[in-house]
View 1 (cartoon, one colour):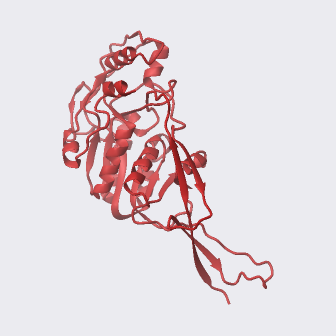
View 2 (cartoon, rainbow, N blue to C red):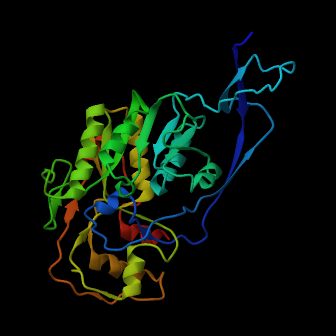
View 3 (cartoon, rainbow, N blue to C red):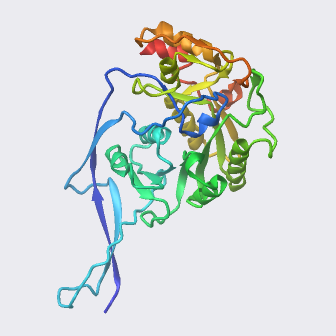
Length: 360
């Protein structure tokens, strides 16, 4: 007689955390907000993130992680060539979180989500297995897009994958919404680039966006946002992200190495620390909102020259930046997200880039 018996096994994990001795600064050039008003002209990407965690499975059975296994009853010792079919499909809990594109921002979101929901499981959906070992070490359950490791839908989903690795970004976002069960929240992390302002003027949540057809870059983002809003999800448009990291990463170090660049010094940058972008995202997720657009920035826009003046005066670097010499490249915009802050009750840990430098 053949049948199926369900067996539930629980595992437990112990997490160890240590901090970097001397954090440095970096701006992101690979995450979606690299398309933001910051208009940073450099290349590179964050490959690693300075989490130092080790995760250890124990032999004790606990209430930690339920794992659903299906075993054929016909697989008995008396039958020839017996094989037991086991599925590693996990049961999704009410507060479990799916991160589509668990890069730098996604990993910090995972950490902050776990602080809010200690018993939850966090899953990271990726296009390759390149960083699965890293994700496992920091407590994120990795899975390839299209795999059957997790068959249930999630109440909480955040999309953090950049458009650079997707030939049809809106379609990728649409596919990601299929992982959402319609409860909780779906959040798409977009960019502040679509706001239609390029003359260093002021811009907030109500500023009109660039018309479709003007720029392929903003078209891509706006079409992806439309998919999310139609599905009932929400959007957070993030400005230029930065983070303490290796000294050889980021726009400021690129500029330091060059010494002189042929771009205008008065182009305005809008910044937000990765940690603040993550905390804002978690607050939006927890609100269980529908069809909303928010803005993430520190409300302290700076020109390129002001950024490098701060870096030069910080005493953190042996080199000194010389000059920006350009006169004809585009200007930026001055973002303000006071409405987002008032509605969500959110304030950044780092109110400005200058205060961040002082904290190092």
